[in-house]
Length: 218
Image (cartoon, rainbow, N blue to C red; front, top):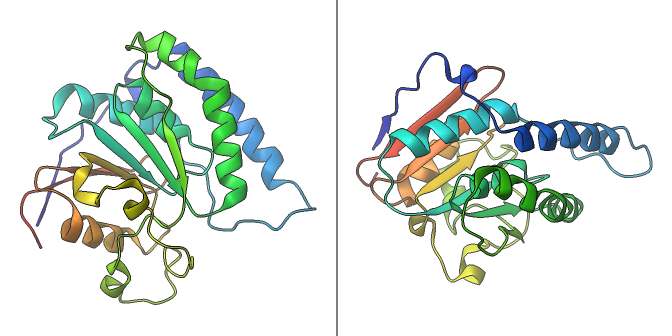
């Protein structure tokens, strides 16, 4: 069972470090250039989130909520903005992405911005966040879907977790940006596979963040 975490009304007034603002501006330009290219196939499922609001939400959760551990995973990390922000907030952050071209862009983001974000947040030096190409769905999670056309299905790649030597219940925080209509599917996966006490954070569209805590197994 999942328990909703009530988010404060004025999350968008929380301060954001200058390095995060700079990275978000840079990534907006990179993403716009990527999506404007005519010489490569477009990835329809890749849509940028409101990264400032995501940062403010993660910052508030880090500050106010009890966490069962320090591992963070981003489902469908794209250009890795959220993975990097989680790293800057002190989580042991990891991003999973099925598209090889997005993994390349994400690794470029890590190379260009990891040090700047860490310097601004003054966290202890750790290894850079890891990005893994593959399927973020745990083995068997497809069976929870009522609709076989959901964008999270059908990637054809194996779940990443066995290569990591981890399971989804090894992560304290999961972040996802569900495609319209698949938010409940992501919640069902989290309910079924996450550890009790873990937190799911979702960006669900303009000005809409959600957070859930797993309080018992489904």
